[in-house]
Amino acid sequence: MRVVLQRVKSASVTVEGETVASIGEGLLLLVGVGREDGEAEAGWLAEKVASLRIFGDEQGKMNLSVRDVGGEVLAVSQFTLLADTRKGNRPSFIRAADPERAEPLFEYFCERLREAGVSSVKTGVFGAVMDVALVNAGPVTIVLER
Image (cartoon, rainbow, N blue to C red; front, side, top):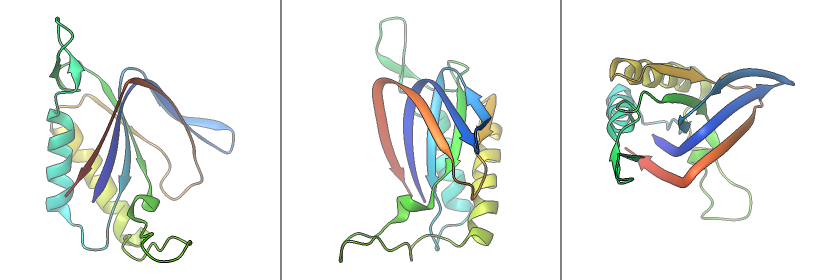
C-alpha cells in the first residue's frame, strides 16, 4: 500500500463538474492499494498518517500531527501509484489490487484514520475520473509505503 501525503491549506475533488469533497487545512492523501495488501498495511498506514508530525508548533517547528491541529483529511484512491515503469514506456498496473479488493481496503483505511482521532475524513469517488485541486502548504509531500 502506498500513500502520497501532501500538507495542504485546502483541497477538493470534482467529478463531472461537481465538487464532491473539499477540506481546509490538513492532508490530501493519494492512496494506492496493492494486490498483496490487507488490513494490517492499511491500519499501520492510517496510524502513521494520523501521527506524523508535519505541522508547525508555536516555534514553527514540524512537531504537530494532523490530529493535534484538528486538521482535515481528503483521501483519494489512486491505483496508478502502483505503476511499474521498469520496462517499456507504457506503465503496468499489475501490482495494483482489483477494484473489488481495493475499495473495501481503501474504506477500511479511512475508517482507521477516524478511529485514530482524525476528526474529519472525506473521500473522492472510488473508481471515478476525478479532478483534484490543492494548495500545497510548504510544500510538504511525503511518500509512505507498507
